[in-house]
Image 1 (tube, rainbow, N blue to C red):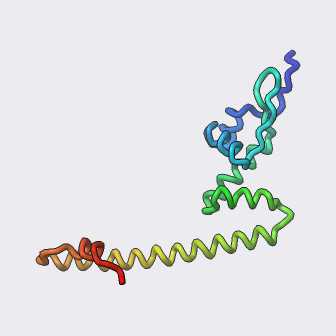
Image 2 (spheres, rainbow, N blue to C red; image 1 turned 30 degrees about the vertical axis):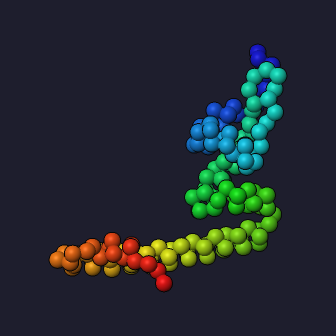
Image 3 (cartoon, rainbow, N blue to C red; image 1 turned 90 degrees about the vertical axis):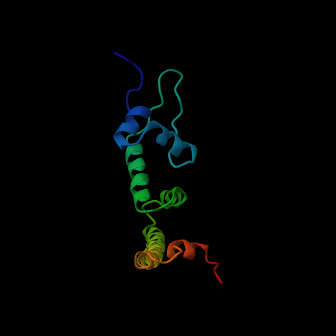
Length: 137
């Protein structure tokens, strides 16, 4: 029977269990989002099973538009600071709302330009190009 410590996951198994690649795990370690276990004299580093959930947390937070720096702050706050986490989530939501409004305004502007281009086929200059060349006051 092998006397080496078999509990925990190798980096490859951790990556597979968390549905990321090995380089993602290494990057998270490099920037401090994930603890890198000590390498034993023989064999491979073993990651605790909780590392899978930590990586999944990071990926879910990224899907919610949190930056890696913001995720590091959330991890530092931990579960016992719900109020602080809620405030950060509210700030993120407000930022997203502003981005949505900005994108809706861009869509309206582009729609107007497209419409001007469609109705102005006989014009010598393209309304879209003219708009992009126009100097802002």
